[in-house]
Length: 438
Image: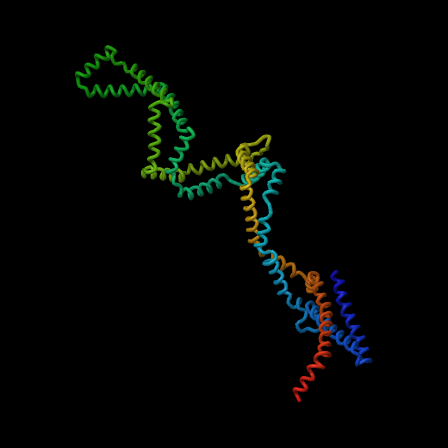
């Protein structure tokens, strides 16, 4: 199609030239004929217009007839042309505003959800997460990872204010029944401790110490009376120890009852004390000191190393849906919960899609200069002939129409000029000018 327009333009110019030659021959033999003079004038103007536009269009690409003054514009301004094209593509055709508008209209999340669902849904996501974690775990040394984690925790722990958190933990424990559970465990532990023989011996030794203290401080008469009491078996410390142990066990049995008055008082005292801790500066100082001591102790790093070592072993162990390892069983419920939430929550899907679009736009914006760079590199690899051909392929038809229009407009202007000269200038304007001169 481009070649046809070029040929049409050449044919048009050739036809105008032949028309001009014919008119010139006729005008030579018939100099006074109005019609022939009109044909000659119009064909002359059309030829001038056609030749002028042919020269102008050709001068864009090369030197017409060897004329080198302001011709071959594209090869001569090669760098400017390349830079202009690259700038237009980068800043106008593919500017970030247009790119962002197009990207934000793409439903990334819908295609992503469909693809993941076909691949297996939450099971597929869990498997992919395990693959990543397994590869990461294989490259890690527990000691180095523990040291990095310990350093990070020590740095961030400076902003931790643990004292007020005690209240929150106590409220959470009370709401979920962990305080009562702790008291039950305390009662069981105390019962087991109070029921053993060691506790009985401790009570007995305590009674003997009291007796010795009373006897030593009671004088001769008191010691004599105590001797008679012991001889008459009126003071049997073994029986007293048994009685006290039985009373202690009975008290601890009652303590297991949530409605026991002693348990209720102890619970209220504990909660009241916890509520007062927020304003206890001494307690806050002690908590901060305890935090510093724990974090700076070498056992903290060793503990992290042990935990991370075990976690890395679990992460490195193989796992399948039929035989899941501990890590799979740990993360799959969370992945499943989030996967279901994404599928049934339009607002969440919209936020994820906006995040994906924004991330992609940020990447494109950071690398947006590459668009112009690629255009420059592509055009720089073209020779002058290739660059001319490139422009002709994009705008060649319009340029050839300029040539055709030049001949037609020249002919129309020539017709108007001829009519003006014959019917206005010579019969009207010239006599007026001559009369004025005379």
